[in-house]
Length: 276
Image 1 (cartoon, helix red, strand yellow):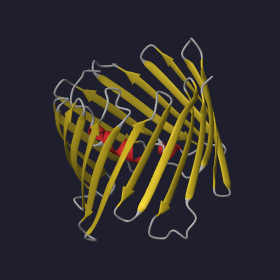
Image 2 (image 1 turned 180 degrees about the horizontal axis):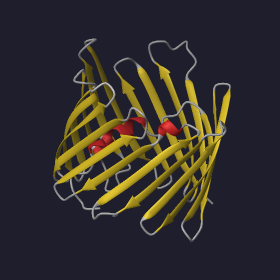
Image 3 (image 1 turned 120 degrees about the horizontal axis):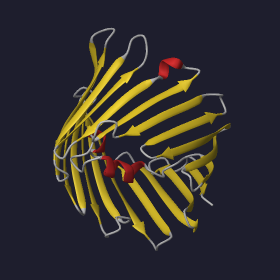
Image 4 (image 1 turned 60 degrees about the vertical axis):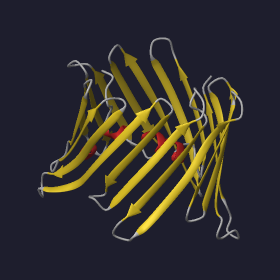
């Protein structure tokens, strides 16, 4: 794929990932392994509240084709086929979940040095079509996204965004929810490895006249340990401690509580990901 402005979904993604990734409120165990011929096997179990769920999966990569199959405890089989460069600079993704045949989806991504285009069609009797596009460079990106429902002829969504990226920072503004919300974010990396950084995000919803401001950060204590924290103007404080116990295997502990109601029990999460 060509190096260019990236996909529309990449706008604001770095800041969003720092504020959301690894913040968990359940218990999860996952185990994955891979072979030299491109086959990767995974299994995971999750406990949330009093409910438990799990899945097993296999990912096989051969040349420009990737096949991902996952079976969960509800007997759903999710299958995704990804093929790169059927046509130069394109990626084609077909997905379906059995037994729900209406969940089928076909997506085509095209990337150029100064533009990208993504089109996704739901394979159902009343298909919906999602289209997004960006123009610019890796440094400056402007893009838009829209969803169209063929049965009613209505737009299900429309979003626009702009992003300015530098080697150590990124700023973005996204107008979404059919113009009802605007989100501005900024992330600044503090080291070359981009493991330590600070982020700020403000979201305004016009229909309710509500503002949400969130600040957060991550800090690499050493090469094996990282801590993260975030706080918003509604008093929600969360923290993450992640440690690499053996190469590529991580234990993650997370906690969240409301500083305005300290009598409530905080939420705790624990995840163990093993990669022998």
